Length: 155
Image (cartoon, rainbow, N blue to C red):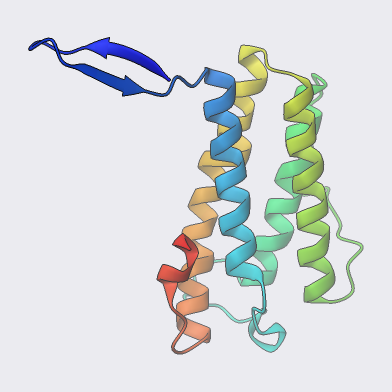
């Protein structure tokens, strides 16, 4: 902890996070929340749409998995060909496992690099983009799992 003096001279303690630790904490929080939404999502509802303009849960899982491939390609300086990802999963549960595995791999790549470009890419692919889809997935879960407590995401 570090201490700063406020205008009336009383010390206030605060924690210092580097840009790297802030991004890593954000990536980890998004990942945990994503898993909480997907755990026990009913596979028989995974291909249903809450709204015609939204992804199904299964489509969102495959899309996010592709994004983690794109993140890795981006770190290598390569261009990802969007739509080229073909999941090897044969079930929704397998697709969720594939997502978790690929996201964990992407997070490990982040722990190996901490330059500004990598941090910016992580914010794009593993934080901002994930939270966007977490919102959609939470909507799907609320629609298809009556009684689901969305506040459970915060526990």
